[in-house]
Every structure is written in C-alpha cells, then in structure tokens.
Length: 59
Image (cartoon, rainbow, N blue to C red; front, top):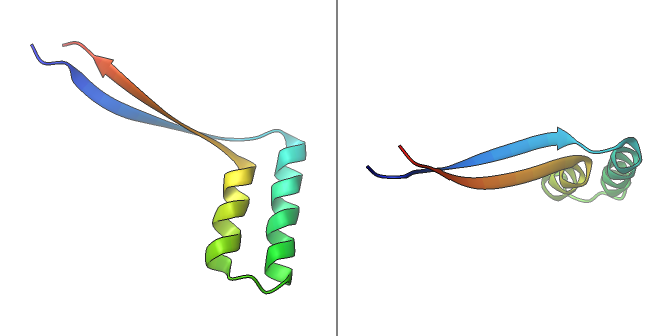
C-alpha cells in the first residue's frame, strides 16, 4: 500500500468589486502602453481566486 498524492487547483471568480478593480487595472496598464505579457496575467490574478490544495489519499 502506497499513499497517492495529488494537487487540486480551484479557480473561481472573485466578488464583483475585485473584478472591477482588476479589469480597470488591466485596462489602465494597457492604456499606458504596458506590455500585454505583464498586464493581462496580473489582471487575471486580481480577478480570479486561485487556490492549490495538496492532498494525500491512502489506497
């Protein structure tokens, strides 16, 4: 018997005020000619709630 390990990643949108702040921040960064490679991931990190859970299950 070997325990199995795994990772679960939960991605869900945040509440409306945080979505508006993230969208506005991303739009402002793009309007100020920031590279999209930087502005879009940062805006997504603000807008989305990302949680990673490590779990171990016995077989």
